[in-house]
Image 1 (cartoon, rainbow, N blue to C red):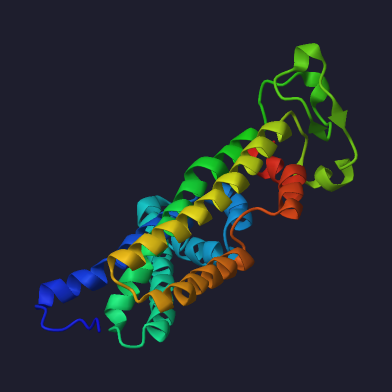
Image 2 (cartoon, one colour):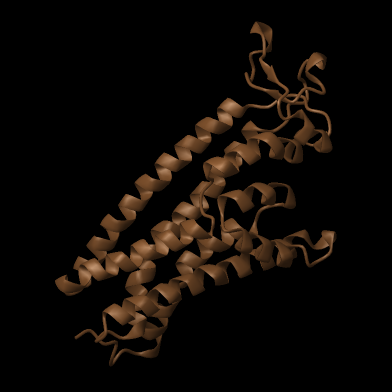
Amino acid sequence: MKQVKDLDFWVKSAIWFELIIPGYFFGKTFGTSDAKYRVLDQFMYPEVFIKLCGYFRDLPPAEYYYTGRFLGVIVGALIGVLFAMLIGVFYKWVLKDWAYSKAARVGSLAFILIALLTGFMSDFFNENIGMALRIEQEAPDELIGKALAQDYGGFEKGTVITEQNSHLLAYYGTVRANSPSGAEGWWIGSLIFMYSWFTLYFLCAHRLFKRNRVPRDKYFKLQMVNFGFLLLYLRMGFGISLSEYHHILTRAPYMFGGM
């Protein structure tokens, strides 16, 4: 039996405060993007989360930039906290003789890794994909109006230009140059890193179960809860799929780079 009993107010409060930790990473990720990069965020993360945080971030007038940023982060943090609390509900369902706060604490501590991954993907892979597809302002004049530059930085040795998507891209203005090969490298790297991190998540969850003396017969069920939430997160839109990457490659450069 592991009930949370006979603890003073501050110890009990600390258990709930720990749920805020994953909220910070989600808030930082979903609520800080400028409108320009929010387009790419909608491919990497669940679109509904990005739009919700973006709505609150854009509420204040332009002169209150940091107020809007704060509101966006707060809403993103609430999403993270609610996600962690929902995991606690299922942990409590498996660990029937545990207090909800204890079960939620163990679940949220494991889920911090996914929250950290979410923030890391935003800072590193997501923005690097966007930067790789950013239009270069100093590209040769003969490239203006072409559809897509396949060879970034190799203009002196001859750049291969494809025009197969020009009818789709005309709406976004003239094209100068970008780096699809660089973006593809970051995208593949993000997939490898993401699924490797998922493995780490299950290993760390196992260690947390052992440290908190979770009954051995509950291990598999709790890991299935973790697997279910990862699957839900992926189905909601976490990560850039092949079709989404193609869409980014052919359209988003013009949104990021301007004219």
